[in-house]
Amino acid sequence: MQKYVSEVLGTFAILFCGTGAIIINQESNGAITHVGVAITFGLVVMSMIYALGTISGAHFNPAVTLAFTVAGKFPARQVLPYIISQLAGAVLASSVLRLLFPGNALLGATLPAGSELQSFVLKFILTYFLMLVIMNVAHGSKEQGMFAGLAIGAVVLLEAMFAGPICGASMNPARSFSPALVSGHLEHLWLYLVAPTAGAIGAVFTWKFLTRPAREILEAEITTEGRVDSGQA
Image (tube, rainbow, N blue to C red; front, side, top):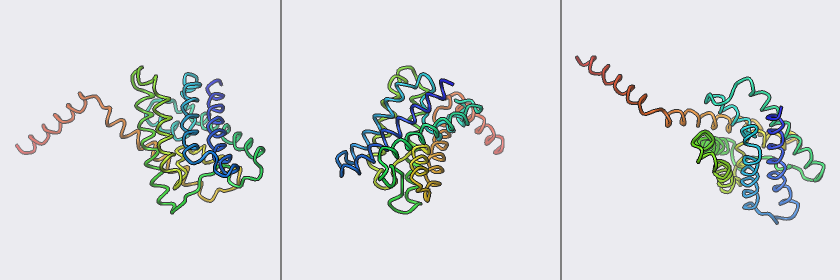
């Protein structure tokens, strides 16, 4: 239960601070700026990883949970409770923001500035690289783990900084789901659910390939060469 509460709290904080920054930026005529919003997302993600990572693993993202499961790093029986916890925290945050800013139309919902294909490709690539970083720092050496929050938060900040104006730079289905649901803007929601999930899972297969032991690669090459030589003979 502590893990699930941790996921609720962490996802709530990310949505409350991140989408809250978007809302307040709109309400204050740009006082925070786009750069400030990107920094807010990066810092809150980093902070929640350090605060709650030892309790739940600090997923705070259904795409990350599914990708860890595909990678064999997370038990399948906990996938549904984790995702429910993440969505609950996200919806709770958007609901609080609705109470605080009832006149805001979007509540930080992510909408494509161009075509859906453009945003889909961007979302896929952004989440792909985010997950690739997560897989290497979250399951690497102890030294890497110490800097996991900083590395992951920095990637979120970087990607939100340059891609946010086009696709919203949401690499998290829960982050897109809750403001879309609470504000009633569901027209492009499928894009922000499918693309990040596909990108995160795609990164797992790349990670598996890149981290295969050298011995397995060598054995595979020897076997392949032996088959070729036999065929030539």
